[in-house]
Length: 265
Length: 281
Image (cartoon, rainbow over all chains, first blue to last red; front, side, top):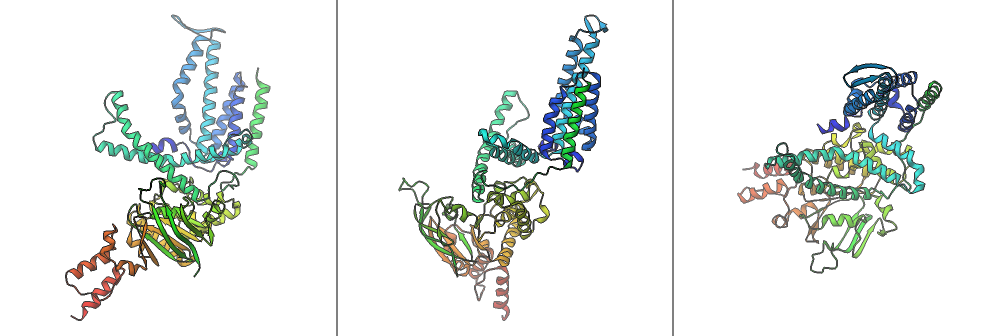
């Protein structure tokens, strides 16, 4: 159940987007977030939306998963839409009921902001839906490499990240086991006041912490035995390949940026 | 025969200031020859795991000398020696570093700076040796305990070590997983003449060894072939060890007055013995 929550996010596949190098995808998303702010009229927003839908199409991800990604922010989306709708008082008055007034500019701004939101969520969801967490880690490690000069422990951060990802299911299983063991002894996590429930979580967390530390120690010994002594002189087994697809994706994004710049008012 | 590991009067205590504390390893000396399968047995806290840690420099002895491949183990040659010594630990989950099977096998290779093309070849070879090549991209939580331990063995083999240390590697597995791991190790030894040191409190596993060392209270209690060691019978039980099933069975049968002719090490031999000894009646 918990596994689905976290790993349901990556959907394996072999679409154009899946085959992109994680580095190019990360750069793409980063630049895209900046480019979104170029749009300021109907044409540019339409172009942005069309480009996003094209990306969705090429990722072969079912729209259902993307809509799912929208769920956590749906309230934020509606809230900002309504905020713009009711409080921007420019342009012609479109509709009035008692003290509520909706102006043309308000409606426009509301729609624009919602589209901007959706487009951002879609693109970032596509990144996580088409790239395994471990590839994202690899991509980040390589992209952040230049910052090593400023004493940023890039290799260590990436290793920490990949080990955490590796241990999520293990610790989830463990939590499940401890929870059942405590339930068998009469602990009750699902009823009672919030205070009582929080109290019931403590006997769950303590054993989990203890075992996590034990695991960490075992893992450290196992890593040392297998010759781990920091990032110095290490080679990489997971190789990243940058090919024509990555060039295409970034050139296309550049093209969209230029067109947006040209069309914006 | 070439001596591959030797310990001379090795002593180690986890709290050296406190002289009242029993030493974890107390004046141990022994040799391991190239190509041997040695089992170190002893109950919990007998110092057997400490000994494994002393052999690959996770701990350094307070007294005595540890020599591996003819060199005295010290800070300088530590990493070179570790690359010659694969080690598999007890908990299958806590030694799985990589996100997938192949990443995990490659971990030791990455640490030792092996070039990429060579790495791919070696990962596939080692996984084939433990018959896990079909699981190249599996994630650890989709594997059984036995499979995870086989991956751990492959990870140790990838560096082509001379010695494989199994530190209670089968103690957390179900009987089937244990069988898988032991068969794998057995097969490996036939194919590669690898030196194996298995630390265990399971005497069934120790039966497979060429030589058994029995540890008790940090000291060497006995040393010999499985036949010699198991002839001690009740003495082993007093040390907190559990006898193999066939030996328990035969001592019970002898107590009941069933005559048996020879000693035997396995269930097959026991059955044969019962058959032969009682055939003429």
